[in-house]
Image 1: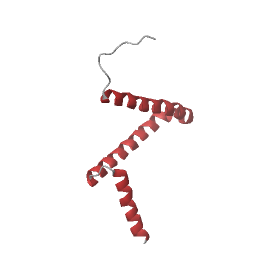
Image 2: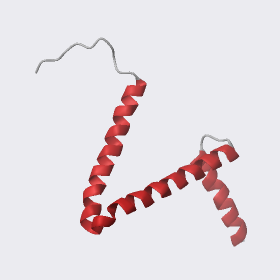
Image 3: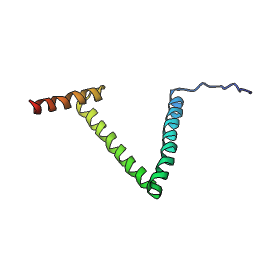
Image 4: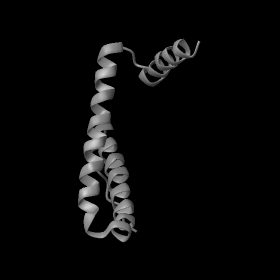
Amino acid sequence: MIHRKRGKNLGVLELVAIALGGMIGGGIFTVLGISVSLIGVYTPLAFIIGGVLALLAAYSYIKLAVYYKDEGLHTLFLKKLFQIINFWLH
C-alpha cells in the first residue's frame, strides 16, 4: 500500500466532523433497515417524528442550561427533581 505524505495534519474540527459523520451515518443506516422491515412505507414519518422529538429534547436542555447556568446540567437537574419529589413524599 502506498501512502502519500500530507502537507497538513487533521485538526480538531476535521476529526470531530469525521467522528460525527460516522456516528450519525452508522446510526441512520442501521436503524433504516430495521425500521423499513418493521413499518415499511411509514419509515419517513417515523424519522420525522423522531427528529421533532430530538429537537424538543435539545431545546429543553438549552432552556435548562440557560436557567441554571451550570455545566453539570444533568446532575443538577436530577438533584432538583429529586428534591421536589422528596418534598411531596414527606
